[in-house]
Image 1 (spheres, rainbow, N blue to C red):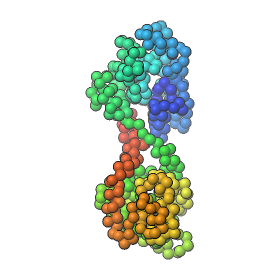
Image 2 (tube, helix red, strand yellow; image 1 turned 60 degrees about the vertical axis):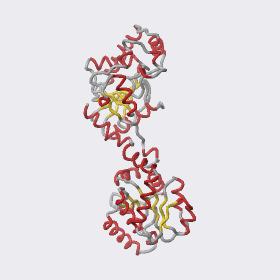
Image 3 (cartoon, helix red, strand yellow; image 1 turned 30 degrees about the vertical axis):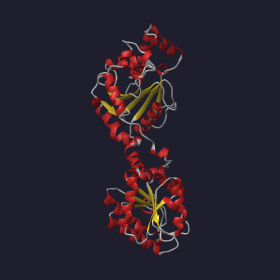
Length: 411
């Protein structure tokens, strides 16, 4: 198992944009088979696959560090500074034994602990470090607040010159241009790796739902449609399947998730389920029945909890509810609470519940016609396209496989 070290002045659980990124990097690296060594002046990031190495001299605060920072701000490179560089070099060399790659946050571009920067540079210059990815969030030499504290020559020039063999990484195209100009690099030599989101945390997806989402590929659906109902004829599920299939003609990759099992009170519902499977096959629609896909090790259906249904509501792009008969229409209220577009049959109970917030269709309306209207709704609301783009491109897992893993492999 390869070990990746992540370095910064402070680590999680200290709260800040860089520390949050470090925590996300550590989680996704550990989840993908790396051993992670978090090396910082303070922090406590221990978790399965993650170990913490605390070297207090790496911090940006402390009596000695603040004394040296004041000296440096006046342009003085004192014996205190040189002694600290020696000490940090030794500590870092020990902490990095066995490490295959480094991810260093801000230390090559910010002046919050120049002894840390100088020690790292010394080890790198002597060939004592593994390949390094320099994640540069902030640039001291480009910040008017910091520039009065910087001076020509060593060690400040370490922040404004490229280090040979180091791969520089920034979080946006804007930052790519800034860093390339500062270091005199071709912009192509600077890699953009955006921050991401933790989908499971943000949407409160439990482990069972997350496993189901990944196994069924729900993150790649667009739109992801939800039909929270038992499998009975009055729910008119065959129409929902046909609509889902028809949406493909409009450039979409829809997927429909049906949460309920066959209704328990009518033995004919088992035959209805078999009919729906045949409709799915004939239509080419991407349709997941949780009764079929959410099972135990023996293949027996597991009960779908209210919590799982709520999690799917938060993940979905639209509620598709073509029921022939309803007494009320609770799913319309649930969709309204999570701001989910509603597409439903035009029957009095659903209209009474949804008012003018839904897109209605007639029960005898052709599926292609309904699909065309749904496509128009999605096309007119850029939020749904953004939601799908976030699911596929901006989760930490997607960013790891697309951007971070190749950088580690190149090193």
